[in-house]
Image 1 (cartoon, helix red, strand yellow):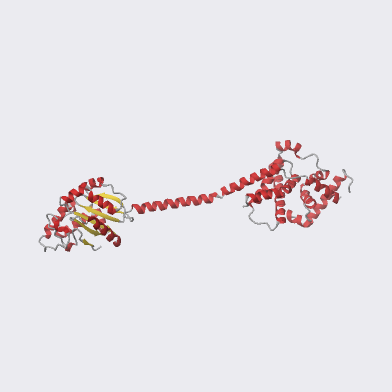
Image 2: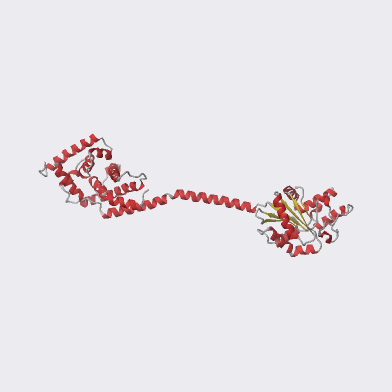
Length: 265
Length: 161
């Protein structure tokens, strides 16, 4: 039977073919599955995306933190006592005032996120400040930074901003001084003046100075100093200062105008 | 993961074979479609390459046979007959099936594949053993018994010996 059987079976089975409809539907199903599988492989992609998003968040948080953390301070004391926090990108990220005048001045200024040189220029061109300076007030600008190089760089810029102003003195300080000043509730400029004065008169307290303008403190210092040798002019413009005759006390590492003294930080 | 083109090619190339195996084992279109999907999806998902076209075909056949077996084995199926099956059964299998095919379909399940593979696909007992994961001698036995059964059955219809 084998041969006939085989032939007959072959013949009848040959007639059986996959219906077009069946094939089409299978293909549709497969393409759907392949497509879905591609989509199904996405959890990995999604995880990667999530990880990337997390990373981005962390990075941007870190970036914001980096941006918003002051690495240097510029303290400005006339009578208004202000302190700019400068981030590592040389932008002003915080403006802190240490007395009411400073508060008023800070409110007038819109210098947040400005480059500190521009900020300083704006401050100097501020009417209030102009008035102070014209009235013979004394302005002290103190730069504090942990990084000496950066500190001197800022100081240099600050000095170039303040050239032409006669009664401005620039100093540098270190972060320790900043912290001490802050814990005493003073801006660093005033705190340094306080230290200077305290050396001459140990009975002076911080509270005594808090409400004095820099001019007054300076005058006080000078009154102690006046018995000391008249210091030379050191070629700066301090002479033009009214009142105190531009007496500087080199012993206390203090200079006027462009006189720049890197402190022992 | 194979491409869609690859999948379509396989459906065109092996569709008839799969359809025949389904035809031997299954009685309705819905199940056949299930098998098609299962088999070709497995094909699509198979990462390992095939040694040659013969290997590929043998693989398709084995997967189809197993899929049919699984389908027939499933508990639900063994206890129930779906309404569709009842409806479709009436016109599913064309009436003009030859006696020979009817005889094959009437065989117990385990004989169908060896008969199909041997007589239609032309595989040797050894090859059938490989495809079905059976001992060659078992395949011989199955073939012999199936032949006897077919003979008995067909002798009642035809006079061919």
